[in-house]
Length: 196
Length: 196
DNA sequence: TTCACTACTGAACATCTTGTTCGATTATAT
DNA sequence: ATATAATCGAACAAGATGTTCAGTAGTGAA
Image (tube, rainbow over all chains, first blue to last red; front, side, top):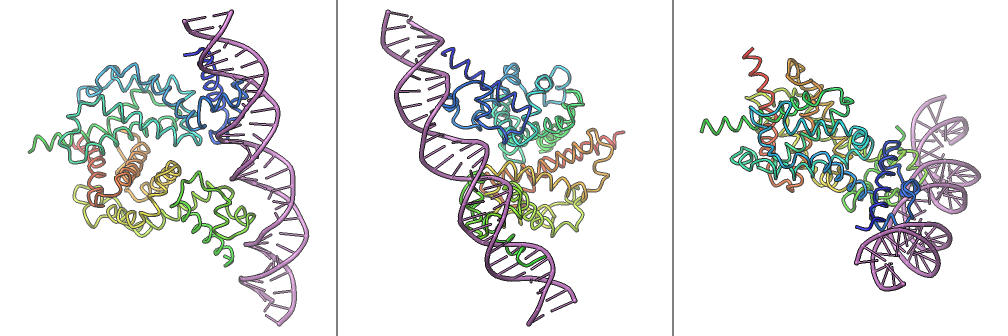
């Protein structure tokens, strides 16, 4: 990729991130972004069709950064009775989220929050679909995509709750909360299977 | 209240609802609303400071209409093992939601969806806090407000999933899905209490 | 009915935002 | 060195927001 493109893109991201920590998303104008990024107006629109697309791109970048390191691992282990704890994938993701607190908190709060959460959910749903063994969703009382949706929504809402608490809890405690409301669901059906 | 005020307010709500079923929230302008409501520009701003406030007021009206009939009942029964089914409060709320499908679906989809869901969650959290016995949240492995948040988020996400499925499932099936992911959580701790 | 309020009207206005266009300029890769 | 691609930035049309204000007309109470 042309260095100029990369530079422009980086400058826009940086400007946007800076602004995002100062004011609410809907208050940020394209004008402010290009002023701070020091790029021409037409250049901005050559890179992003709308401000929402810039937000989406920002989110995807962030998710990739936070999650990608752990994508190689299977996630199924985390949800099993024996899994979880300090070395689990989920805990690592939570640590990453806390490290990126400055960026993420301002995306979650204010009025970009809803969009951010939607993007986060969509991203996580894809991750969980790929990385959770399909047998987890099989033979359930509820439709597979309902359960998948429930798991990713619950994760995002858990993180959201954490951030609203200023991330005072440790990642381990948050994982415990998350698993406390997800595992019983997965196990309750397992029980049924055994009982059948 | 002055009849004129009420008339104006109703006209604005009606116009807004009509527009909401035709186009996305962010595409709707104040100009269109006042044209259709047939009120003066300054009148609109005398009633609502912003378009978002109008949306919020619309949502609250809707929630009250959908939920208020059942606010007198205790909700705790729904979550118990014996509760639920055709005569439960939750099923009734789901029926109401389906009856108001035309209004609600267009609030859920499109770009008002995120805001709508936030308002819905806030509203439901208040309802659940008041109407669920406090003992449900006591002595849990997870903080009470985490659990409360989880329940209301799960309900809203369940409804959201339902609407994305064009409400093809029956309210009873949806209640079953909702309870299938909530009850095991409430019971898993109960088990712990017994084991203690 | 009268009368003091209160709400509505609607045009006009300043201001801001978006997204596009285009000729000139500058950096890049080979 | 040169063709190519990216950027610049001013100018523009279109349209939205929110305010102001003088005039008009319902409303409720006496």
